[in-house]
Image 1: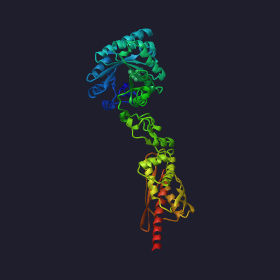
Image 2 (image 1 turned 45 degrees about the vertical axis):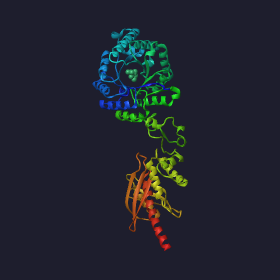
Image 3 (image 1 turned 180 degrees about the vertical axis):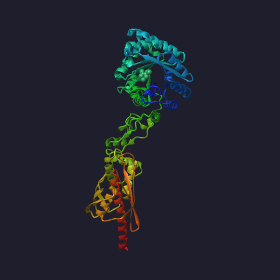
Image 4 (image 1 turned 60 degrees about the horizontal axis):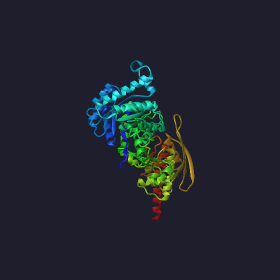
Length: 523
Ligand code: KIV
Ligand code: ZN
C-alpha cells in the first residue's frame, strides 16, 4: 500500500536567498529551479515579486520555464503584493500565492501602528484577521492554491492562532503555513502545536498543514520532523539549510530522516534523493556558501570513515556504521579516509583497491612507513601510498641506511648538516659538514660519513599531494665513472626526502659495483 505523502516546499530561492551575503541573479535562480524540478520538489517558492524588479523577473521566468512543480510567489497580506504575485505567476502551469502576516503579540504590537490598526492589542488582532481574510479572498482570484502563513506562530498565543486559521480556511486558504519564524520552538512543543491545530481548528480537514522552521537554536529539522509526526503534510525547507540568520530546515536532512526512519514516520516524499549531492553543490557554488565537511547527508565527510574500529566494521559490513547508503543521496561510495588511526585493515583494503597485493611481511613494512607519514599528515592520499610503494620497490639490498639527520639553516647562519648512517655491515658512522644550503649541507655530511663522493648531476623536489603537510618527493641523479644512477626519496620533510634520495642513488651505485665484482669473481 502506498504511503501518505509529505509535500516538499522548497524555499531556497526565496527564504534561502534571504541569507545575509547572498545574491543570485535571475539566470542562476532559473538554473537552480531546473535542478529542483529534477530533484522532484513539489513546490518551488521562486521569490517575492513585489520586493524588487529582479525578483519579479525571476518568478515570471521560472513560471514560464519550469514544468512539474507548483510555482509559488510570496506576498504580504497586502493587495499590491498579491497583484504582483498573480502577475508574475500568470504563465505558470500550476501556481500558488503564499500570503500572510505576523500573528504573535510581539509582531502585532511591534509592527501595527495605532493610527491604522487601533489602539489596543485586541483591536489590532481583530484587524489582522480582517486583513488575512481579505488577502486570501483576493489571492483566490488568481489561483485556487492559496497558502496562508501565520508568521511567528512559534511564539503566538495558540487560541488566536486557531481563530485566524479557521477564518482563512473559510476564506479559501488551502495550505496553512505554521512558521517558527524565530527558531524559538522545541520539537516536543512544536509537535504539540500541530496536533492542537488539528484538534482545535474545526474546518482543518479542508487544508494541509505546513511546517516552516528556522534554525536559530539548531532545531529547524527536528521541529519540522515533529510537525510531520503530528500530521503536517508539507515541509518548507531549503537546500543545505541556507536562509535568514541561522537558516531554514535543510531539505536533505528532513527527507533522509523520513526515508531512513520509515518505521517511525510511515510517510513518503516525491524526492529523488540521488540528486541531493548535485543540488547541494550547485547551490553552494552559486551562492558562494561552502558546505561544511561534517554537514549531515551532503558534507564531504558524511560517508567517510577514519578510525580503525569504524573502518574495520564498515569494511566487514557497511551497516555497522552507516544508516544510509551514500549512493542514495548521490554521493560517492563509502570512503575510508586514511589517517594514523585507520589501522592495517583499512590500509590493506585501500592497497587492494589501488591494485596492490602485498604479502603479510610487505604489508607490515608498508604499514610502519605509512604510520610515520600519517603521524605527520592529517590525511594520507592515494598518491602518498603510490609513492610509498614505489619507494619500497626501489629499495636495494645491503643498503646504506639514514638513521639520523639534523640540518640547521637560516638567515645569517652557515647551513650545517649532521648524519648518522648505518653501513651494509651494520656499523654506524656519523659526520657533520657545512654546505651552500640545507640540502647541500646534508649531502656533504653523507659524503663525509660514507666516504663516497659521486658527482651530483641533477636534483629536483616536488609535492606529491596538496596541503602544507604534503609529501615531498626528491629525485637525484648522480654519476660515477661515466655511469648515471637515479635515486628517489619521500618524506613530509623535504630535506629528509632529499637526503633519502641521495642515499638511494648511492645504494644503486654500490649495488651496481658489487654486481660487477661478483660477476668478475664468477668468471
Ligand atoms: O519565517 C517566516 O515566517 C517566513 C514567512 C514569510 C513564511 O519566511
Ligand atoms: Zn522563513
